[in-house]
Image 1 (tube, rainbow over the protein chains, first blue to last red):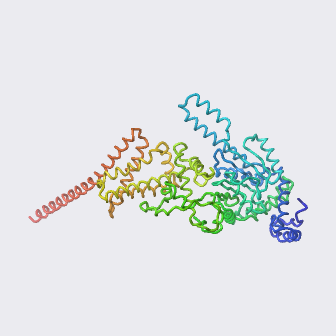
Image 2 (image 1 turned 90 degrees about the horizontal axis):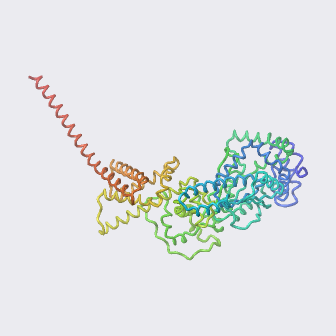
Image 3 (image 1 turned 180 degrees about the vertical axis):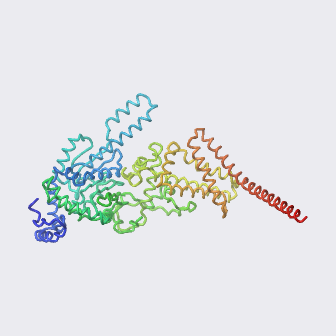
Length: 311
Length: 293
C-alpha cells in the first residue's frame, strides 16, 4: 500500500490536499477516467486497486478499529438498520460489501427472534387441536428455525470474506448464510432474486456508484428494498467542526496505534469527506429507478440510512 | 409527492410493478382503493375509460407515461390485498407483507408502511366510509325516484350507524387492537378527520341543513352515539349483535328526546324568569304603594 501513496501525505489537514492531488495526477495521466482516492486524484483502475489494498491490510483489525473509532456506536447504527428493515422470516437478503458479516449476523438474529414469536403465537392457537395435528406441526417447525430466510454476503475482497467466515464459525452461525466473492458494480447474481439489498459502509468504496445502484436495482425482486448505511454530511456547524477535529486528528493515530496502518485510516477519513451528501445520494438512487427514496440521519448526519423500493 | 412519472428518464425504464391505469380498471375492487383519505366522499369516481389492450412492459419510449399508476395507488392496492390477512395476523406489518406477496411483490414492500400497521387501519376505515357514502347515496336516489319512503330521522340514523358498524364484523376480533392504534398520538389527526367526515356525511344524507349552533350539537351527539355503540359492539357476544342494535336504538331515542327536553327546559326557564319578574314587580309596586300611602 505504501508504494501507491504520495509521500506528501505528511500534512494532516486538508490544506495539503492540493499538493497531493498534483502528485497523484502526474502519475495518473496515462490510463482511464479520473476519480478520487481520498483527497488524491487517480484513475479508476488505480482507485480500485488501492481500495483493495486498503481493505486487504485492515481486514484482520477491521472490527477492532470500528469499535475504537466509533466508540462502539457503529453497533447501534447497524442495529437501527436491521430494525428499519424489519425483515420477516422467508426474506432473502443480499449484503454487499458485507465483509466481516456484521449485518448478516444481526439479520439472522432478528429473523430468528421473529420466527420464535410466530411459533409461540401459533402454539397459543393450538389449544384445541388433536394430538395428531400437534405432533405433525411440531415436526415441520423444528426444521425451520429461520423460516427459510437466507443471507448472501458478497464482498470484493478475499481477506474480508475470510475474516467474516472465521467470525461466523466462531460465533456459531451456520444456517442460512453464504459467502460470495463479487464486485458491487457487476454482481454475479440473476435478475429479480433478492428481497432486500443492503450495503453498509461500503458504497463509499465503490468506484462507480451509479453502476452499483443499477446492479442493486437489477438483482432486487419487484417490491424489493434497497438500504444503504453510510457516513454522510453533518449540517450542524459546531458538531461538524468537532467531527472534523476528531476525524483528522484522532482516527489516523488510532489506526497507527491499533492496526499499524496510518495511511488506510487517513484514506477512510478523506473518503468520507468526498462522499456525496444525503440529498445527492438520494437523487442518484432515484436515477437508478428506485421509488419512495428517503433517508434518515443518525447522530445528526454523521451517518445516514437511505432507503428505496423497486416498484 | 414528486411527480417522477412525467420525467422522460423514468418512462424509459419499465416499472416493474406500477401498472398502467387502464389495467387497474379491469379489477372490480379498484374503485374503492383509489380513494384518497381526505377527498370529499360525495364526489363520484370519474367515468372509467374504455379498456385498452394489455400493455407489454418493454418500456417503449415516453409512451403514455402519465397513465402509470402512482405510488399511492400501488400502496392502496397492497393495503386492500392485506385486509384479507388481518383476521389471522392482526393489524400488523405482517398482514401487509402477506398482502404484498399476493400481488407478486417481495415481502420487503411492507417496509413502505409504518411498522405498527396504522396505514392499514386508516385505509380500512376510509374504505368503509366510502362504502357507507355510496350506500346512503343509493338510498337517497331511491327516495328521490319515489321508489322508497323517506325515513324519519331517528330511523335513518339508526340504519346508517348499523350499516357502518356491520362492516367491522369480519374483523371484530382484532378491532380493539385497531382502535388502540388509532388513538396513538401520531394517528389522531387522521383518524379524527375520518370520523368527523363520516358523521358529517350521515347528517348530510339525513337532510340536516342547519346553519346555527345546532350543526355542532348534532355532530357531537352522533359522534358520541357512534363511539359508544362501537365500544359496546366490541364486548357483545349476542347472536348477530342484537344487544348492540338495541343499545343503539336507545341512544338514538335519547338523543331525540334530548332535543325536546332542551326546548322544554328553555320554555320552563322562560316561565320561571317571567314568574320571578312578575313577583319582583308586584313586590316593588306594593312597596311604592305603601310608601305613597
